[in-house]
Length: 121
Image 1 (spheres, rainbow, N blue to C red):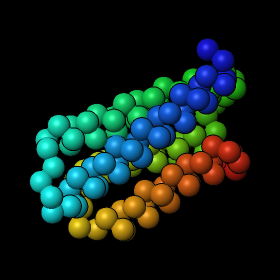
Image 2 (image 1 turned 135 degrees about the horizontal axis):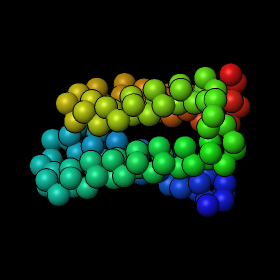
Image 3 (image 1 turned 60 degrees about the vertical axis):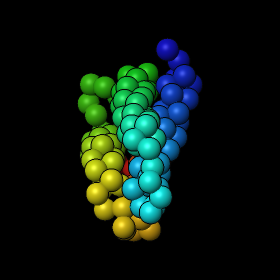
Image 4 (image 1 turned 90 degrees about the vertical axis):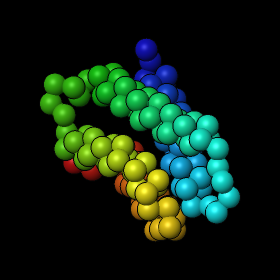
């Protein structure tokens, strides 16, 4: 696949990740009873987004020819990816902290974007 396809899949994965996290936060922070189906779709969207992110991320690294010796910024992005993997648990269990979690998720997303665009180290 071309680098552009990997970038597009990466952006789609990012959108799905945040859609799933936002859905989980809203479903668990409201006093309205939310159907189980909505919670399942939210979790599935989060998981598929994570899968697209990791596959397309390594696909881009392979296309750029940096798979033999991964730079440090990729390891940091993998760590952020792992944090986002566990973020769904926080969104479900700590929904009373919606504002704090939203800011945390946005900050992690900004850091991942910064690392991917500027490749500082």
